[in-house]
Image 1 (cartoon, rainbow, N blue to C red):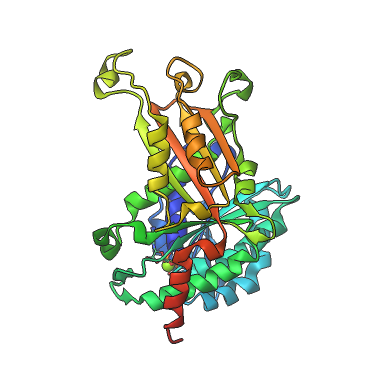
Image 2 (image 1 turned 90 degrees about the vertical axis):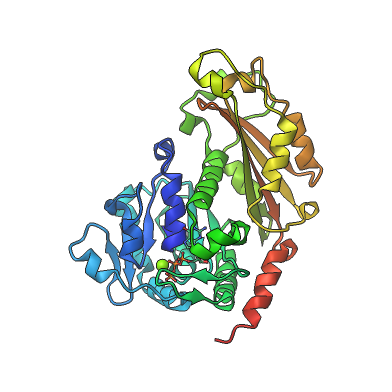
Length: 379
Ligand SMILES: Nc1nc2c(ncn2[C@@H]2O[C@H](COP(=O)(O)OP(=O)(O)OP(=O)(O)O)[C@@H](O)[C@H]2O)c(=O)[nH]1
Ligand SMILES: [Mg+2]
């Protein structure tokens, strides 16, 4: 589920991966038609518009374009009020789109924390998913932290203050904490200055989407029979393992993700079958995945839990080029004793290692920093 512009754009990239459709289905909720029209992989039958005057409007309904134009102007409080009035409508709409049975064990809700729409509606969306699901559903929020350092411009080229965005972020996180089973943070400050200033997010979104896909991609996405793999060094992990890794008892866990990728074929190998296969250095994979974590300056010594998922061609899992996953485990264990490591075979000529580190909120310094910036912002 993508809410608002940033959230929907990343879900769009997640579903660029066809395998994701075997297990999941996308939905985009936004207050601005134009953002929805920019999506490539989520059709209008999967859009839900939200407007102050008209409430929730299905993407295929006549007059959609005229009715869903307002936006919430970076005011999550307004989006929150509107969504609160229409939460039950969303439960019914989920039934219409995904069947009345409510067979949904897991959901991911993506949002930009600095804006109005996603930040304001996401907690209600999570509650609506719980209302729709027949059983216990685990919901993970993936929240984009705003860049509070460099100038940021909105669609009409207006500069958006760091203070406003920081304030929205604190508002959003406080409310997500009460309803999400775990929160994964992605910090726009990890983008280069140029990209942030110009609002160029596409590569970064692809990186985030690729990390999520590689994290959750299991036997279903890869269409393999798990029993086929006996002699391996790590089991197949599933979404429940990810939820567990993000859970810190009564406290909500805050996760950061990172992913490293290596080609398993050298360039000549693409042209000559059987030529140019390369071994993959597990220690380096784990190191790079950590270096590319999605939040600035986290202190890995504070990690409460860590999880890694390796996706690789079969011969790298149990065959002649078997990856030494003990190196990956060793890196994770260097930070925390609660480690979960998985491997899943894949048909790509790539090895990817995606890691998820989980922290307590108080240990994420970047949240403290955003809270301080928010305090300086007058209402
Ligand atoms: N990583 C990333 N960040 C984005 C993207 N689009 C916007 N952002 C950032 O996300 C934050 C929230 O902005 P939006 O997602 O545009 O807000 P919204 O949910 O549509 O809410 P409104 O204020 O009502 O438009 C801001 O900090 C933006 O800079 C994107 O595609 N990728
Ligand atoms: Mg918007």
